[in-house]
Image 1 (cartoon, rainbow, N blue to C red):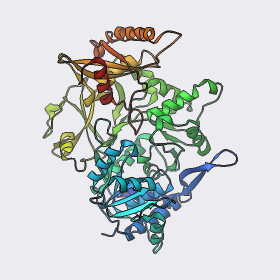
Image 2 (spheres, rainbow, N blue to C red):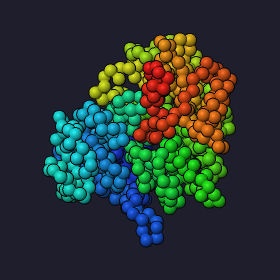
Image 3 (tube, helix red, strand yellow):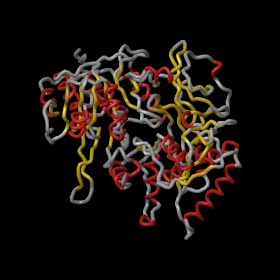
Image 4 (cartoon, rainbow, N blue to C red):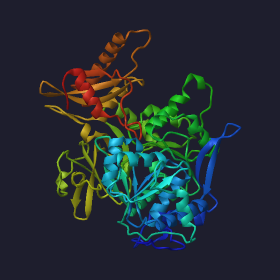
Length: 585
């Protein structure tokens, strides 16, 4: 089916309450008409003779032109509405143009993180059943050698200058040439519940799952983010998380792509973040907790003593993917203008955003409670979201009932319902049944997270459901417990795991710490650390009864690829069980 073609799409801000069609790509032509000469995307090329980074830059008019060009070309080679289309292209202007081209056609974008591992990549790509594959040279070589999407794929597009060592893929330049045959803009009139994308979860608690996004889901996300953060067209965004890079142009922001390895945000070279902030006067920065920690640590290095780390252009800093240590939040806020905050939006691939909290409240109130075992406060739910806390269960819940709900203050599963909440996982019927609770007018999504409401209606996140440790007489919650021990020393990090010893489940704390300090031996230092942990455990209800502490000798905790921040507790549990002579629980 050929996509509908219109010359001037009505901006969705002025559309009817219930439009007959919704396409997330419609924001681009609307913004191109409103601010054609405004910078849309900038991508680093190389450093000039003066040592400064040189950027390839497109205005909104140019991005609109390029996306239409590629959309027409892709249609010419058979990419059509509803077709599952893999995009494995590094962040670049072409990446942005292709994302919008796919949406404009009404095709279904299949987005994966290359860092999820070769085995997971094959499983996820095969599950998505793509018929088109657009990728860089390395992606196509892997597709050919490893047999990715062999069963369903029939269209291949190669992005890059180097030729492939085999045929069967059309160069993107050829696709663009085909797109020049006409000059009409493309925009498919997709229904609100039409699938726009399949985006895979990080896989932090298992094999990544393909989350089905509709155009209405994306539209609701854009609206919620604009409303919550008061984002205005003309702002400048530093894109350190490419999977959601489309949001910047959709909201009228200029997207600045930094020079970094997007699969290793925790290893970013801080000057490569600082330089574009200053050069482009960035107003919006999203960084994973690991990236912000790297920036904070860099600022405090002895070599930078006396240097000024101040970013007056920033209007907000956002960080998500895992709890952000209060000390990191405080250090980043020191770099901002008075009144500017660090926000910690809470959500997941399946539903984003759910809630949000700013650094004023975190540093002034909730961080102290985190250190006492209350968990991490993520703020009040966003306005358009129905949020409930229900009793914990590992089973399918076939239908919603009000008696599932727990009273305020009780820790249970966080469930949400609203326009940005996705409806299913693609080709994972059992996972969908487990995660969704049908109700009279829709469904609730079980976040897989545990938490509670406080008296002010704020959500306190206590950890993943899969990471709770259930013993014979009580349940321990990962994030709530770890906050108690993380307060002991900024150089140490704690992780709760369960180990089965002699038929009983034992809660254990793995400790990432400095092995020596002040000339003490490793043994002396650990004995002192262990004593401090034992003493602190008994001071708080959440940690009372924890008596097993293990120094994590391999070094830094294993973390997820996407954010470099979520601790891989499953891997840690296996390691801890081996150290104690038991089994992972």
